Length: 346
Image (cartoon, rainbow, N blue to C red; front, side, top):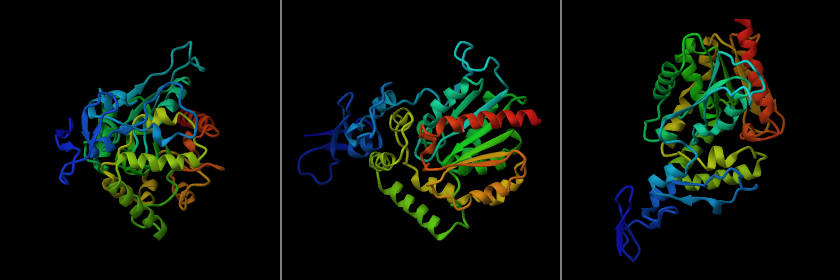
């Protein structure tokens, strides 16, 4: 007996017909979905008491599109989140400030990646804006290009920020690499930047090793489903020390590698060495010592504002160090100190 996928309307069913897609059922509503939709709409349901480490692949569930958006930690009613400064009774600092932090996530992720980080800094009086990049999260169907990233950030700034606000761009991994391009195009909009996990040059003039890494990522992301990539990433995370809100920020929001080829194109197109010297503001770089970082010292040396620009490398940290409880609060406190120093020198 055959039926149709509730999302893409493909014929699904069992039996011996070679031309039918495999039939699966949404883990929430039990409606029929094809294997492709199911594998791209897979996540781990989040509960406030996260499951103990290591996270198990068996926890990944399949959903139809409607249930997927309902179960995900992402709010699909909007494409970005604004985290206001904490109320006085929750804040560590009685004074709010005029600095806004704009957070941009890594490849395949979403704006939930930095949600707990933004909540932590809200207690220091900061307003945060958490952005979904094109091709990711609630913008999964928007074409991912560098110029679309610029437009996304620019439109949010125009809606949410005033000309008097100091805006700090905070980008992790893909959000840092595309960030170089965004910052170059919107130089005057930002007072400073924090760039995380971008110590390796993956641009046009990158090393053979980095070039192979981009090729390998392209092969994986264009030939594997989001569920398969989530399982593979889970294996890497479980070998790591990362343990900070992983389901809430990552596995419970979902993975978004539908535009993996475009993701690789964006990273391989950007040449940080050509952009950094044109940026008028200071940059704070963060990396883990176990990550690839053949160009971190070069990036720092190219900064125009040498007085306030700096690099912090966390010994024993890897590509997931900003979700490692050994380092995360120190990183956030350094971001706070950096933002204050930028304001005090204006």
